[in-house]
Image 1 (cartoon, helix red, strand yellow):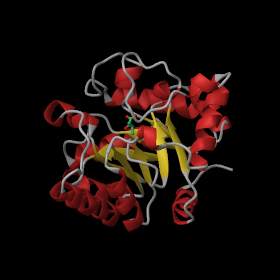
Image 2 (spheres, helix red, strand yellow; image 1 turned 60 degrees about the vertical axis):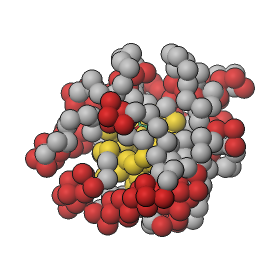
Image 3 (cartoon, rainbow, N blue to C red; image 1 turned 30 degrees about the vertical axis):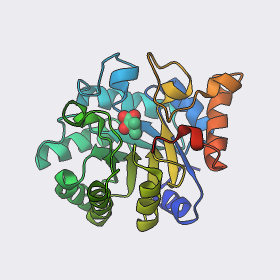
Length: 263
Ligand code: KIV
């Protein structure tokens, strides 16, 4: 049975953990789907792990449409979220057109866009048009040139701001939220304040689910992997088993453990 938005919301409500992973092509999407991954994210992280760039900024909408389309060739059940890449959401009209391409040509089930106050208007409009939207708060990879790769929400002001932005995104119609590199206590508070699933990365174990970049899980990231990631190939005999072990550990709340905290 294919994953749906209402099933994902029910999982959040029932505190059943959601396992999410990135994929960028049909073969890997197939094996993620077979392993029981609930949500596949076609992340613009492909700019780094597939294309070899230092950041996600060079990724184009055309490339996101292409990778989403080939992921969906290999996926049959998992809910597929596709990233709106850097500068593809600068105006409302551009955002709607970019989202339309990811859904119509790429076959995405949902689009993800980074930011808080900046994107509220667009989230409202997309939601009104029937487009499922995933927000993305905390560390925003598309803003690294300005803000760097830093944990967000450590002080009182920024943690209040993150909580408010999360609530505003839900009110505007967002149906899911990715929280990246946020202290675990704040991630817990945000998750408990929302009725939509919150998928954490580097944000502790108290979110509705977890996401990792596939290359980090497979131990094939070039350079140093992030502290919050885990190389599942170290104790698995195959890629398939590594993905299954990740899904099992997320569901059993064994991943992440304290060694992956970046608080
Ligand atoms: O692009 C991506 O892979 C992401 C994850 C890091 C959440 O946005």
